[in-house]
Image (cartoon, rainbow, N blue to C red; front, side, top):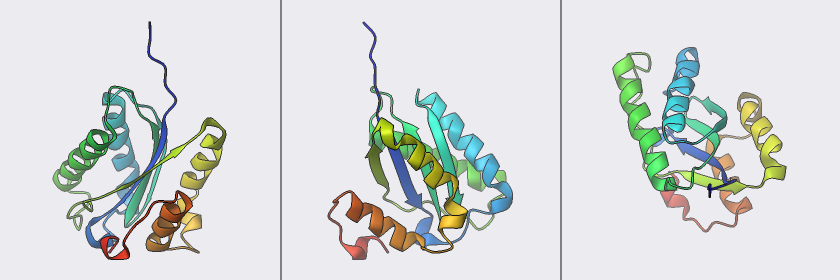
Length: 148
């Protein structure tokens, strides 16, 4: 018997100290690289987008993959690639933590649109406020000192 799943995650993480080190000029190449990592993990990418200081990934999660291993793989491999490519010269690393938020099938299109429109959305809300809002929306307890 096959294993079936429907596990949608929006994964959000920032650059170290939220420095604006994801340059728009090469972000599409970064997205393609991360897409390869996601595919290698037998997961499906639905949408990816970023701002200079953070990234949003909306994908499913294969049942044989642990979320923490999945995010670690994305962060470690993309960090190495960003440094070695020479295209993200000010990039140091990703922040230590991440946010992972689950969604249902009925939310899928809304989340895809939200991530697609990150550049427009962030004209009105910075990353720090967005991240706090998501944590509150999902009723996740947090200490602001760890969000800095």
